Image (tube, rainbow, N blue to C red; front, side, top):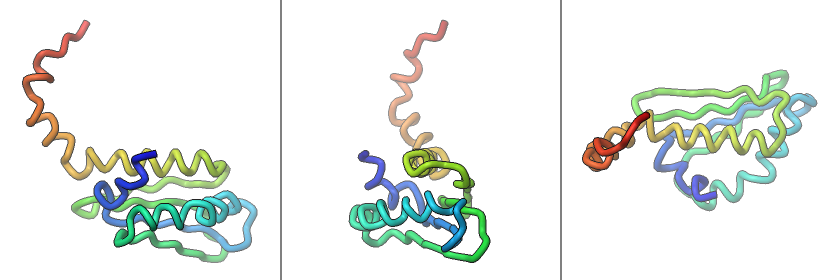
Length: 117
């Protein structure tokens, strides 16, 4: 799970919102309890914000360069599904932060040689 150490490279901020008591937020609470320490250890200066609010729908928000934000509702997701959702948000940082276009420019000759059927 090398993507876990990429939080600070691909995102500017991560926010996890959930209710302290509602059953719909149980998996989000469990996710935070099981994963926060590891994520923070791998990304010590990266802001991981945990927001508890009574009655709120569980969700995760990623903020990228230039204020672009993407959110995912977590209600009904299991802990492994939440982990996969976070992985997808982290990997999306390549697109939002412009690194993909830099990669294409550096590898343009390889891209031109691709064969499409």
